[in-house]
Structure formats: C-alpha cells, structure tokens
Length: 148
Image (spheres, rainbow, N blue to C red):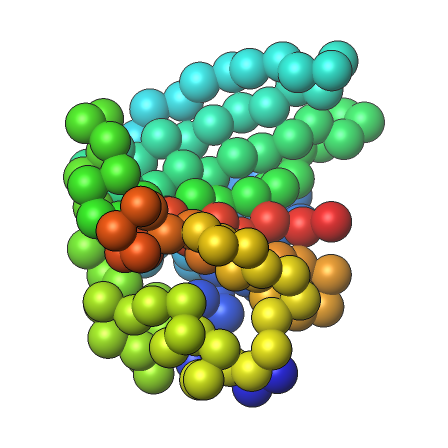
C-alpha cells in the first residue's frame, strides 16, 4: 500500500495517545474550533467524546486504567447529518485526492485495501485503520480513524 500524504498523518499519529498529549493537541489545532464534551459508557468502558460540530469531527477517548487514550476520530462529509457541518479541510487531509473521490479512486491511488464492501473500504497502517464510508449515491460520507 502506498502511504497517505497530508494531515491524515497528524491524526493517525495522535491515535492511541493519552488525552492531553502534544500529538493530540496538534491534531485538535487543525480542527481549531469550540467543542462539546459528552461522556458515555458502553460495556463498562467509559468513553469521552469531543464533538466539533462546526467542523464535522468527533474525537473519541476510552478510559484505560487511570488514563484516557484517543481511540478514534470521525470526519463527517457530504451532509452526513443535521448536527454536523461538513469537514472543511478534506483536501488537506489527503493531499493526493480531490474532495469528490470514489472507492475506485482510493484503490487506484493506494492499492488493495485490507477489507472492503459495497459501501466502505478500509486500510490498515501500523495497527491503525483508515475506514472510508460511502452513501447510497456512492459519495464519501464519513472517514473514521481507529486503533485495534
């Protein structure tokens, strides 16, 4: 697989880091807007969500012993829902792609994915995932970064 070029690497580097780390702060500075915090528990695991509604981004932290680590980042695009604006920096996220890329564009540019289906495609990079979701019109609707 060919490497991704762009701000995507800053966000990938932040995954797995403890809340408050410089790598996470660097990623948050790209989003650069106010956010709301929400706490959620699932399967006895405490999660903290940073909702950047005006930028179409969520940072999700999970509690591990006494600290929280960045587990996933969601980027919402193409009018994902009414709560979130579209992520405005998609062209900087992936410098080698325009903002209207398709599943086929990804495969041509980055090679065979780790997994895929009719409406999503996923690449694995050093135990971290880049997951692209497409709507019924085959338009990109969401990008999720997460760790194993």
